[in-house]
Length: 86
Image 1: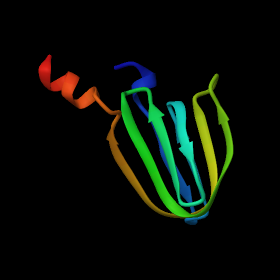
Image 2: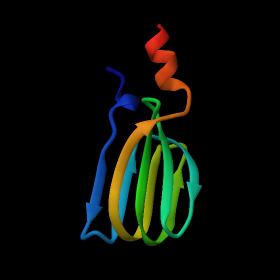
Image 3: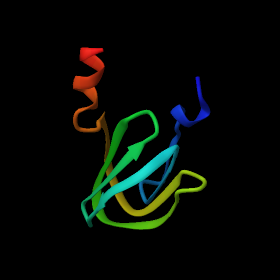
Image 4: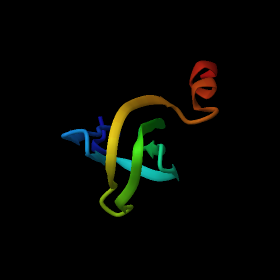
């Protein structure tokens, strides 16, 4: 398995979140952050007063600060259907 398909999520004291293997930042609001990972999954962070601390496309890392309440996984739109039809 390629290292880009492996990712890590680290939450420090519910106040900071670090994510690796991030392909792109889809959206950022005070209550929701949506990230696209290299394995075609979507990672959504739900919280309060969320602010992007940094995103390095070269290193594929993302950092945000605020109150992290929930982390959800999903698929990028259309990718689940593509996988089912293969």
